[in-house]
Length: 371
Ligand code: UD1
Image (cartoon, rainbow, N blue to C red; front, side, top):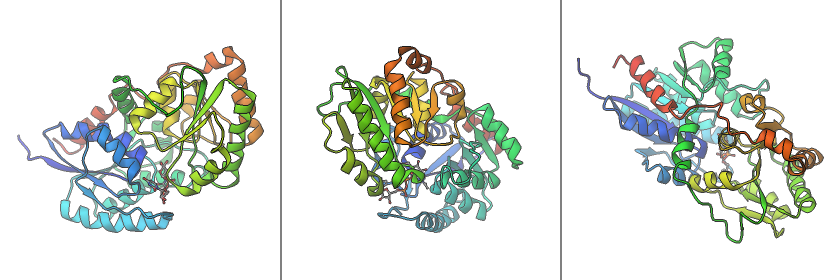
């Protein structure tokens, strides 16, 4: 029996969603059973554009909602209303969202209101704390309650979903970030940072952006970076700044003048992968980097009190260190002083996937729709 192509809407708003959905979009686009509609909320502008270009994806619709200093309610309301109109017009058979952003939550809710089945990519991540990360932990829990197809990256995520009593079907797919990472890493990307000689220094790659780290924690983190560089003259720090002024202004003020600190604009994904390959270690509050760095054999010190990615901690490649200045310096110094400790963490392991998650997601949707 032949079917006419079924419409799938894939909604994204921020940079990590673009990275993790790019291979999924490509997999749907190359499958004749589906017509794929890529919907951007526009929660991020420049940071998403970069990723779309690298993976050669174009948006079919863009709600263009971003405003400077947008609040969570702004993002939710504007996305929900814009998607209501789009979904009513497009009448898709399923809507896919990814992760835990406000875009993902609003898109799942918009689909639910129109009784369109939701597929959740990277489902089942959990911390024990509703405010950590904030608001992401609540977003993903809320999405799980209105999702019919849960695409869990790891066995732990499957178990978390089973323990949450969700309805719908749970599929262990692996994390699509590995699909994206392997595609880009194979191209052996370079990473040119003006005036930085990667060969000359042991370079620390750092990123900071999480809401729970705004304010005092951000100051403490920056002081920690300064002390590490002062203690170890053979180190440099590369810190791509998030576009949010709440994050970038204090970091620029504290770190902007140091000769071995390289504050850059957000790196495009190719450069970022090149930077992970060249750096000595990572210090970050990012979720995605906790998944990418172990796959490329780099230790990660995580600037958070909790993680929804315990797989890397269990495997010994990531360590939770929080945001206290003295602790950051102690933990980084330990890795910089002791080769044995460093080598124990610098294992190329891949607890998050095998690079084929997107294919499994397409197959599950196909099966769900009886195609
Ligand atoms: C969002 C996600 C977070 C994700 C992060 C990745 C939520 C609640 N948070 O946080 O889970 O880890 O994206 O970056 O969904 N801005 C620009 N240009 C851009 C992007 C952002 O100027 O391309 C500025 C704007 O001033 C904006 C601010 O950054 O108001 C904050 O963006 P927002 O999406 O609200 O939060 P993020 O911290 O980026």
